[in-house]
Length: 120
Image: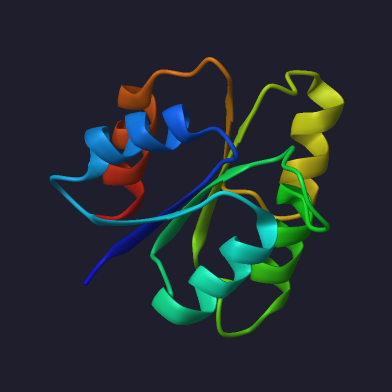
């Protein structure tokens, strides 16, 4: 089964993406970085849609680091979903291994198109 993990502390964003992607993929949701790391270990998703700024001890960039530095998970696609629109923020995410960077508010259809192209 191809799981997509949606990680965002805003339930409305998770719901929007779940509705948009739910017909094509199995959706798993997490609302913080700790829950995201647990879900990644449990489900080994093909892609993670990951908010950068979340409450708790682990933010999205730290989750990205954990995914991309682990030989078992480094091939998981990670798209950052963030309100941080500065070029420096994008560059930092790319340096850490992000596969895509979507600035909020983003089009869910953009995300679907990106996933379809990458998961062929």
